[in-house]
Amino acid sequence: MGLAARLAGLTTSGRARVAVAWAMYDFANTIFSFAVVSGAIGLWLVSDSRFGERDGNFVLSVAVVVSVGLNALVSPILGALSDRGGRRMPYLLFFTLLCIVPTVFIGWSTPLVGVLLFIVANFAYQASLIYYDSTLKSVSRPESRGRLSGIGVAVGYFGTIFSGLFLLAFSVAVDNRFLVAGVLFGIFAIPIFLFVRESGTIGRVSMADVLGSLTQLRTTVRHAREVPGLLRFMVGRFFYSDAVNTIIVVMTVVTTKAKGMTDSQALIVLLSLTVAAIVASFGWGLLVDRLGPRRTLMIVLTSWAVGLVLGAISLSVDGPIGLVMFLVAGAILGSGLGGVQVADRVLMVRLSPPERVGEFFGLYGLVGKGSQVVGQLLYGFTLLLFFDTLGVGAYQLAVLTLLVTMLIGAWILRPVSDKWQGSGEGDVVAPPERLAPMSAPVWDRES
Image (spheres, rainbow, N blue to C red):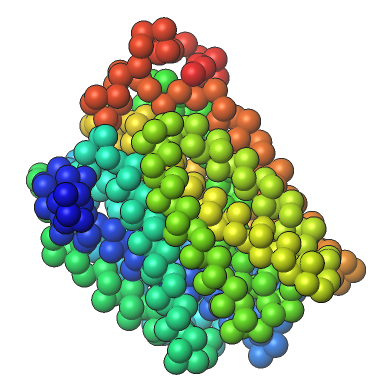
């Protein structure tokens, strides 16, 4: 069987181009995540001509907190509105454009205006993920969902490699990386809007919807409590996403400032680690389909604990040994980042009833963004308070705060079952003895 036929077999439409187009959006949005969120904005803010290293790290944390905090407030509303008509692509298009347009102007702006533009762009980027992730159910088959999710994440890493090589090949200055990232994001996002088709109508938003949205979070949480293990998964995700989302934002600044590498050296190192992450993403996808998303996610979080500890220690070790430790830690964290993306969105679909996938992905987004608010504040305040006295040690302390929250998340997630009769995947049915009763308290439901 050829590659095209295999890709076609992963989709509900039976068309390979749908799988390719869907995965290409991961390629496109990862360009923004890598080139802007993980790279340019941090370097831009901590430069001496703007806020400097200590204050720039804190401003970066505040910008991320504001953008994801605003998004967290509206995530359940956005997800629920997409469920009204069953179509998510129009919303995805709107927020994709709202991300791209402000991004291209950041490098030409004053520091304050640049921060405001980044807040808008990152808000839109985070909102777009709600709709992109929830389209996984409409484009894939239940038995192949892990593989297609893994392909998307792996293709996203190719977006990282492509954008990184592009920046290196053309020696793109930090100020110009925002324009390049915005243009590339737009180009590679086009296929999903051309080839992915949905049934249903676009939900209309009335004043009653706006007023009703004020109680949407309470309603969504009530709905989540009716699903075995879902609310516990959300709480666990709040804690482990703290580390994942914060590392994404700060990894380039840590590489350049804490390890003393140049911007170009940091790009080369991060790209090298991405290659390992690509291979791992395919492996995580296969593991999800074989072991299930919950067990796979627990393995991923265990690896992250090792990576965070090793990375923190490496920051105080000089010479080749310290560099090797840093690279090994980076490879573990890069691989784990792919594993989290592959496993937990499949677990989200696995736990969601079909009619509430969009609503629960809104809550899923809220949880991830809420945790990023906490993680970034912890990280930013740690550096602000201890940088002048501890120097590099402040970075180590900040990283270890992320380790604590991640371990709490793994402990909370451990009892959750990824098999129940009301799953969004209709063929995923657990034996009766594995199913927790719907009336049981959420915190008492075990796998």
